[in-house]
Figure (cartoon, rainbow, N blue to C red):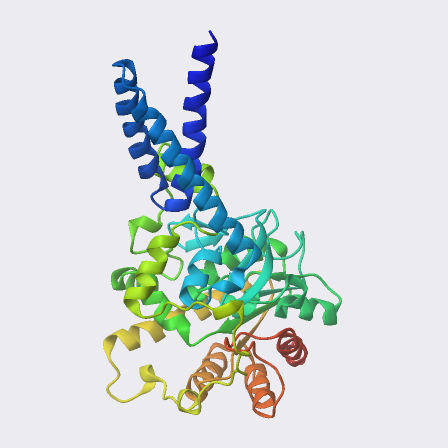
Length: 413
């Protein structure tokens, strides 16, 4: 009886160690490691029954060493996260993914959407901040009504700053009325229109602020096939479907998805070996000697980027450029129509550069018959004058930059 109990305990220990090692090996393919470990276990059990128990004991001992090593590396990265930087740190520390511990979930139309009731520290480009979403799936407190909603990408979400330091939060503090932050990273106006329809309109806002970013145009074609975008142009209420089925929600019985969403441990060290190897091959591997790094540099957009012409409006513009701009315009028009349906006023704005892009957004607002705010240009001017409007080595707004943006936008309400 004791022998059977001890044998059962050994198998239980093996499965626990395998869980740790598989979680450390890969966020995406950890279940494959589990399957491989179980196959080896069956082989070892057969040898054990054949009178050769040493295989099982060696396997358990090797797995124990691997698990202890993985947990040791995990402890080191949690105690001294500054040992890594650059793309490696982004890959290991960021929670911008759909696996266990991630802040996103797959969506057939949005590509990714933020998970509701998701809480914890996240990281990008040297900045740590607390990510908190409410049961409605956006950053900040849950709301039954909002005076204003903000649409946009990570500039609106508030990359690198705490919830109360984001642009929508600073606007709410100045206005003294509830404001919803519907910003999500890498979100263009097509997805923003979907989020407005789904989350914004039920809040019955009186103001809808829409932030255009130069990356929006390319993000659309990266996420959707051209055929889907052209259908959106011909059917404004059509919901485009993302190009990769890998981004579609998985069925509940997909065991790999069960592992990546619910079973795997959310380790910072997950996939460390592969991440380091890839970075070394790409020449992007950066380790901080002694855990220290030089001071981050003050961010200003390069003058050549500020002066960059707006490709879709140039003579002889390519068809892809024209398509991207047409989709952006259509999405802005759809947002205006949706907002008008509940009597809300739309205010378009941008980050202030490149100059030609900013002028194109102002002209779009004029053609659409909505308000335009030059807030982004004002912040750029203040940054050039020496104020810390942007996060160093990054480009997103600092808390002071978000507050200044909010004060500028107050003039357009």
